[in-house]
Image (cartoon, rainbow, N blue to C red; front, side, top):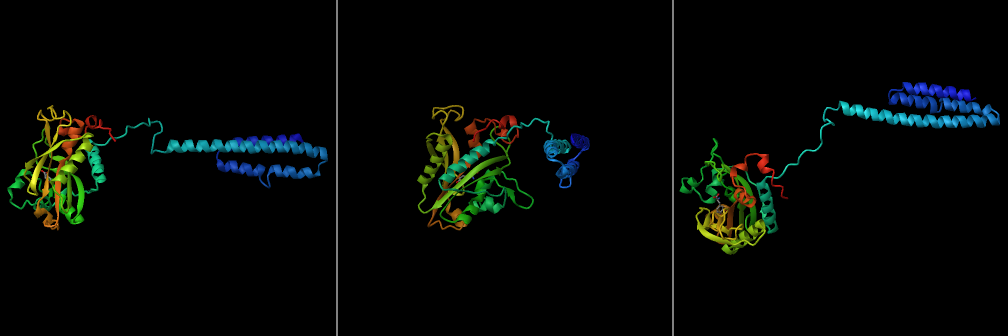
Length: 342
Ligand code: DAH
């Protein structure tokens, strides 16, 4: 009786050794454990045995069945693991032997300052807008009160394209678009990249960033301008900032100002950052010229507003103590990798 089971066991072992894949394994399972398999066949013959033999045979067969079931399961797992290993080996998309640590990138210092300003202005109810870098002459000049042949055009040495359009020289190029989009009242800032033909040195670049802002409503005055500028700059420098206005000329403002801040680094005593003057010229601004409002479809008799053109590049350099503007466009990770703020 036992020899019958031993015979089956030997057969199972030799067939199991020959199994190479999941399909072979399944065939083996059906041959031994299936409804018409060897084990069922033997079980059927047990009916005719006398009681003692049947019990003994039953015990052998149960043991054997358990052994077959377990070995089939183990072999199944082994085959699956081998399959996955093969798959990984043949997968050319990645190499599992390479070290997996790659350094994370960092934000550009200008992006850091820009995002900070966007957050500050958003919290004061300003919309954040974007505008094209290639603009029309109308956008860049006429719409901000600089007609053709006006000498103020000479202040900005401009890159013209063959089709008569130009790389925007100032974010003010979007003023008309903003006024038309929002009408009055409106509060918006619009950061952007600007381009001018410059002799490049430590503080001049052909490509730089500004952040323009506008607020239009009834009864807007210079006090509103001072309030918003002071609040924004105090947030940026994380301390109370003293500002002052000096007269400045911009064709799109009336009156126009240069806004200076008392040096946040030395408190006005004089240091290298403020070139020992105690004050830093930071933000040209002014009350929006009635012509600009009119060209934007807004009635200057009813509404007034202020605008400013903050030098984002300058502000980032000052905030992070970057001494040479050329680092900013250099793509040098050695220089730019250091600003991990945020
Ligand atoms: N667009 C001017 C420039 O690039 C800066 C400026 C001055 C913007 C006064 C303004 C402003 O909005 O009111 O030099």
